Length: 353
Image (spheres, rainbow, N blue to C red):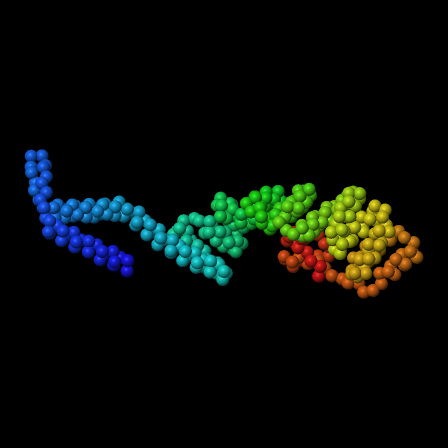
């Protein structure tokens, strides 16, 4: 609508100017070297307009010639990108449906159309992993470390791989790299803490636990679990006084956690706090008739006279609940609680079943 109005306005102005020129034609005289040129004003204006139009058309022609190659390549690249995205979609869909052969074929086409990109490398890595080709997966993941978009993901996957191969120093280095890239991600922080615990870097693990972006209660819980694992190693090494310091904090944070109760009872007993150990186990039994409490009590009172034993064990009458620790990550079952699953080595993944 606006263009139509502008066009009509232009026609109207042109008509007015034409009428003025017709009524007042006038003469224009020009001297060009030894020549004298006389013409009408109307012809001069028309000549100027035609010259301007020709110059504009010539400029547009030159511009089109100059930019023709870039437009050609732009259209070609847009076409390749469109085809590449289409092949990429086919590849992802095939991978999702476990059609590895088709996914690999489409990924090759994407690489031909778009060249190597972080996404094609990621797809190739997933395809190699699905085929069980660990060597190729490793190579592709290391290439993905070079790209900012996939650096974090590659570091996490490589860290997990190194961890499964028991190359813990390398796994920790990669996990720390991932955490630096994404410092607010609790998953990467937990991965670092997990590996520090396995490498017995206790102080670093406890310090990192305090920096987790979690509610205060949950941070204290994770810190207490790390102290529990450390305390058990102290107890095994007969470092009873150091274990006692940790036990007091652990039982205050985890008063109803069965492994914490058992550990603290043993620590009390080793530090000649026999009555505290008995009282702790007796109170725990009232809440939960777990076999491990009865076993621990038997262990602690083994040196007691028979009558004393009978009197204490009388407090533990009733049904004995039994169960097992199961990993919520891999469903592996084990009888003893540990901070890591015996099978998959996942951190803090055991639940009482």
